[in-house]
Amino acid sequence: MADGLAELQGSLDNCSEATLKKLLSAVIRKNADCRQKVAKDQNLTTELTIVSEDERRQAAEDQYKEVKTSPNEDHETADDVDFYERAKFVPMRLTYDERKYLRLIDSTMHVSHYTDHMDNAATLRAPAARKLALQMKQLCAVLTGMQIAHSYEQGQQLMSSREFSARSEFFQLVLEIGRRYKILNPERMRDSYGKLLYFLQDSRKPEVRELMEFDSVVRVRTVYDVLSRSPRGLEMLEDPLLRIATMEIMPEGKSRTTIQREIKAKEAAIKSLSSKYCSVARRRKHYNVYSTFSLLRSSYADSDSEDDKTGQQELTEDLVEQCIYSIGDHSTYLRFNREPCDRLIAFLKEYFDPNEAGTSEFSLAIEEGVDGARLSHSHQRQYTFVLQSMTLWREVLDNMFQLWHLAEEDLLDEVNNYALTDTGQGLQRVQKSPRSVAAMQKILQKVQRKVGGWIGSSTVHLGDHNVPNALMFIDKYIQVPRFLGPLVLTLDKIVTLNQTSSALKGYIDSFGGVKVLQKRILSDFFRHAFDGSGADNFFDAGSCIDGRLTSAWNWCSSIERKDYFPIFLLTGFTGFDGKEGF
Image 1: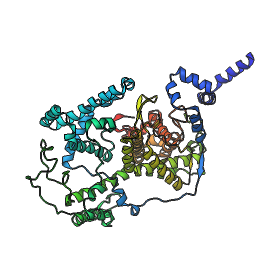
Image 2: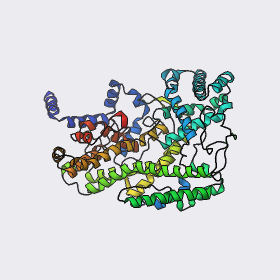
Image 3: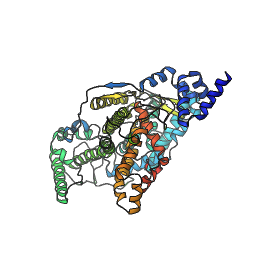
Image 4: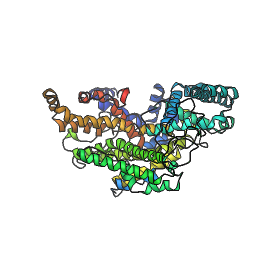
């Protein structure tokens, strides 16, 4: 017996680090008692109580699931765009007056400590009556501060009367503008928007609404809502000229004459549509006419446009133009966010053969326990896995505005309340999101038809400890262009960098040249950004829908340890998250 133990000890001593990790991972995964002991020793007991053993077992079984269907290349082209349906989810571009309110709501939420007061351990244990009193105190403080910042006199009146319902239209307007701006600009209000949504979440509770005597949430103002003011307004969405009026003019491969011709055609189309479908011709502002919000805006300089007045129900020429520009903004947003996915899919098909791995250096095959991988895939299987993952991300980004509207509906649902829960990553608002889940499942089915099946788990984590609510879900997917964009930019700039100087050319040649270097970076990304890494179990990471993003971010976090990292720096790379580094 002693000889056997000594021999085993010797064998373990001779094992490489990768082999030991793989062995330890297998022991922990297969032995429940060992897993429990490690969890207790490492203070992971909270996480264990959230996910049952049956759920973990099912998650592990789903990692290598495979569904095959006939591929259906139903790629959407520009001619397939349904402006009528799209307009229902396209937010209106902010007017000059609305931007003043944007600064108000952004600044209010930036300095607010609402979530610090509400989402903490003391509040979690507090009696319901005490929690309601604290909520009302914090909600009233935010609204009062917002009103005082807008108009000191009106703020004084509000503090004296405490009648918040008398200012309901003002609060609804400002809060809606903040939400609309965030949808149009996902990279802005990164901390303010979360506090704003959680603030609105609490304001919608029946007991809070009863005390406040008004609902702070209104629909986000969309192009469809504005055009609905006139029967002819919606007819514009069916006009073939709208495609020209909203087209994005790209300069690549075009002469200056062609670009100028397209610009003139676009301007003419906008002018023609706005004059044809408006109910009131463009007119100058009459300063003796005041709408409902004229007094509320008295502390700001007047604007030259009256189209955004809440009392104004007519579809003016300026308003039609604003609708057209809003649809154009949406098209630009989609292209900007989808392009990194499209480029990487093109790189995958150009540099790699799905059936032939070629040399081991450029094979996409991964093995569990090797280089941090938690999945084992052959080259062909990994190729398909990467292709379907990026196709899924592209489709999610293509439907981002629809998903965003559904996510807000889930978050601000009066019936389906959240539960403040310790998820192992601090206290989070865990809330079921049936609308968002249903939409994701539809997108997933579309991707499965497009790529001809599905490899791995098709579980959508939403409303659990991985993705507590729809806000976290949206936040995860708007990160996709942030880490794919810098990668594509680096790959493109390698060609330019190679032509900059002989020294840089020599450095790139040390990797084998431009093409070899690009392929080397791509093969590493396609292997280890999709290897199931990022967590120690298959419920939190792996091949599930959410786990694919976890693995990608895990690859981004280790970029500085790659031997080709200096190339990223030489191409101007500053980080995958913009100003906050890598």
